[in-house]
Length: 218
Image 1 (cartoon, one colour):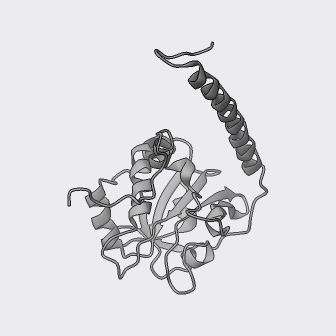
Image 2 (tube, helix red, strand yellow):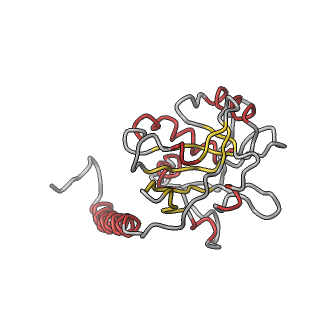
């Protein structure tokens, strides 16, 4: 059914209808990309990396699957042991996912890992109210370097990786490789998960040349 809004001009309606055509085309493209992603063959076999719970208990990657044949997504938060605070950009994205965690858990497993020590992650979880997110430390593991989340100089990188559990062990399925594609500006490799930018894209000014902060009270 055609839509019009109070007071709009013919020029506005013409432009809006043209934009709607492009929005519908974009929706179709997003669905095509999602279908291509679903059709990916399984990637390489995955080592049983050891992660540390906030309690200090050690778990293997294979133990992070709550049920057989589940999918596991692991987001690498940029937070090293020698840092006092995590990456504000990663934190903004995870603030949004924290509110969706219980819904996500109905269909897949999701954990957040970082090179920081368990006690640092425990303090971060308490500070951000991330009780719904499962945070793990990769301290002592090569997971971050193996899956695109740590540079040779030790710099931490934001990566989302997805793994599948099969009868023959855990296999890699997908990683947010657009981060490493050498694109101009921010790679926007996890934008589809991040409500902040999607909301700002709806404004006349669009997304600003700005980065979210950990705290806006100062």
